[in-house]
Length: 361
Image 1 (cartoon, rainbow, N blue to C red):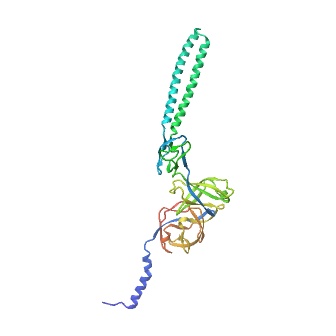
Image 2: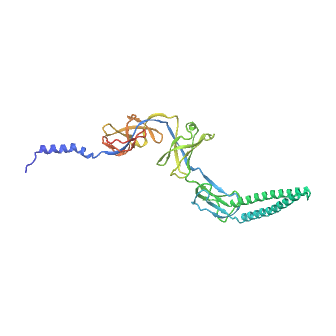
C-alpha cells in the first residue's frame, strides 16, 4: 500500500476547506418579496384611545311593578329577546275591562243604527216628525265617538301590558343586573346593562391642533398591544374642549377581535403627506444595533441594507438608506438569510404596486 506524500495530503485538505462553504449553502432559501417605492406618508403622532361599543345602554322600564324575571349576567341576547319581565296581572285586567267597554258600546251603537234605519223609513212616509230622526242620528254619532274612545283605551291597555316586557333593542350581552327578581321596579328605573360586543369602535381624544388633518373615511393605523390594524375614521366631532384643547374622533372596528375597554393607540398625521422612500412594514428587520432590509440583487442573492426608520401609515414605513424605487425587498424570511445567500422568490409574492411576482431564481 502506497502512502501519499505530505504535500498532496495538505493540498487535498486546503481544497476541501475552500469548497466546503459552497456545499454548506445547500438549496436557495424560499422568500416572499415586495417592491420599494415612493409612497405619500406623513409624520404621525400616536394618541391613546379606548375600545367602546356603539350600542351600550342601561335598559329601563316605562311601567312599574314587581320583577318576575331578569336575564343573568353574561346572557347573549338577540334584538327583540326578553331581558326582563314585570308582573302583568293588573295590566291584563285593565285590558280586559277596556275590551268589555268596547263590546258594550258597540252593541248600543248597533241598536241605535237599527233604530235610526226604522225612523228613516217612517220619515220617508211622513209618519214621524223630522226632529225624532235628528235625535236618533245624534245619539248614533255620540255612540260612535264613545266607541272610538273605548278603542283608544284598549290600545293604551295593550301598550301598558307590552311595557311589562323589557326586550333587547339591539343584540348584546348583559353585563350587569341593576335590579333583582322580586324587587319592585318604579317607572323609569334601570334594570340591566346591555352592551353590543360586535359593533365596536375606538374613541380617541386627540390634540385640537391635529383636527384639520383628520376627516371621515380616512384610514388610520390602530395599535392594540402587538396587533396593528388599519381602520377608517367613522366620524370626527369637530368641537374642541376649551379646557383640555382636545377633540374626539371615532374609528370603526368592523370584525375586530378586541374587547370593550381595551386600550388602543391611533396614529394621527401631523401634516399633509409627502412622497418619500418607503418599504412594506414587514420588510423591516429590527435589531439592537439598528434596522435593515434585505434586498434581492440581480443575480438572485440577498444583500443587507442598513436603513433609518421614519414615519409609517400602517402598511408602508418610510426609510432612509441605500434603497431606491423598484428594489425588491424580502417581506418573509429575511431574518434567516445570510449576506450573499441565494434566494428563491415564492410564487404569489406581492409587489409594491399590488401585482404578484411569480419569477423564480
